[in-house]
Amino acid sequence: MLFRWACQDNFWSGNVLSPAKLRDKWTQLEINRNKQQAGVTAGKSKLDLTNTDWIYGVDL
Image (cartoon, rainbow, N blue to C red; front, side, top):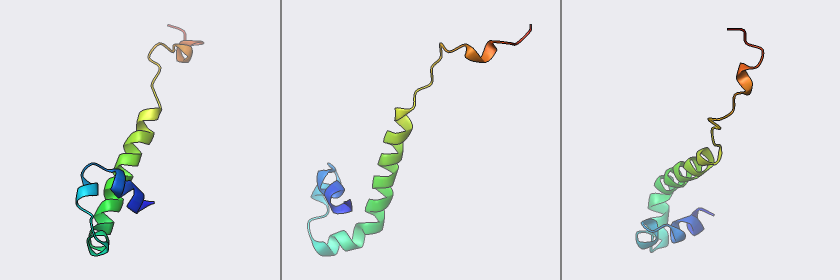
């Protein structure tokens, strides 16, 4: 899976051209892939700024 990701990534596809380079950069590839996936996951949940359910039952 990591190799597939590297082949599809614009930067890494041109920098991992041999098995030796893949082994050398493996940890760096994992870190970059995990950061990218975390960003995608974090972007999925959206905050509803129009939700006022929290105010029901509060006396002012």
